[in-house]
Length: 161
Image (tube, rainbow, N blue to C red):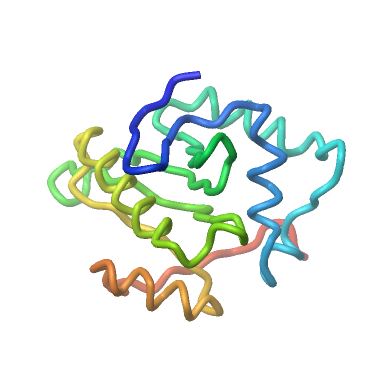
């Protein structure tokens, strides 16, 4: 297990398959995630299959955050290389979650600083994220960190209908 960065009392590393149950539990632990995810023991195979696909894709990392030997946070960081903005690479931040027991202590801000440092180390000139329109607390949090709601994101769910 390689620890990529130690910041304060938190450590960050690429997730291993053994971490999936903790990650999915965090993803499911809110009003929106509880209907999007399926937590169980054993964890449904769909998560392991998705993790294996991600692991094969260069520049697509599921990061776990540890404190005192336990996983308390996660986020997916994906490097996107493009032609626009003079060939600028960007880092997409997705699936940011903090365990309920660890919320409110500034961990989210530390995670975003880590994500920005990670993006810079990969040569990115921009970090971007999407957040559900119903997550008003998250919007305020990201705006406080300097993120600007500069675009309108749209999604087309291919599994409905």
